[in-house]
Length: 164
Image (cartoon, rainbow, N blue to C red; front, side, top):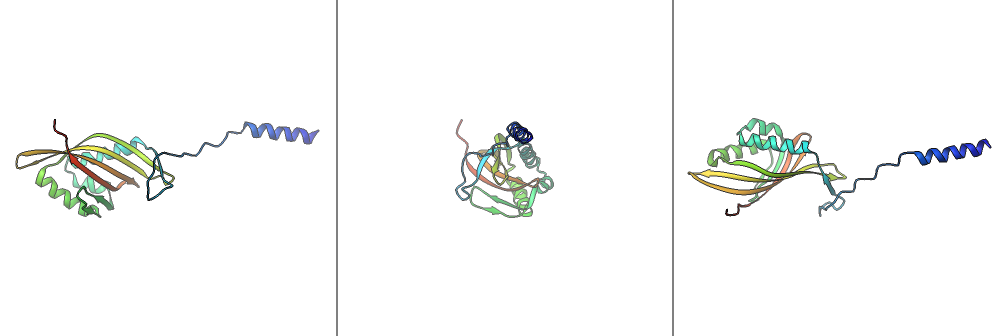
């Protein structure tokens, strides 16, 4: 009788146990890493990106460098590559002086890679530049990875803004 009661108790306890949370599967794909999927990320990532863009608009090179990984990787829309935050600072200083670019983020979405946990953001920016009094506007889509509290890398895709 005691054995039957013990078995019954174990069965009841086992049936009342909280089932494990289902594994997060994610959606989408990344061809070079077929196991990677993606889920919505945190707005902390979005907030960080907005501060990064604010530092650009404020021409705060030191803030940009402090928010960028030492070995940041940037792929520009023309295929140019930047591999350090020092080189990034030099390019930005020249760009700021030449055309006074201003970024206006019009949308952003943080996302996270599964199973790696990498934090990313993809954001659309209107970039307005002024050269010799002539103002031009371009649309930049930037896909960036935030790692260890720093911008680790990003890829910039650009096109002309549509005529209004």
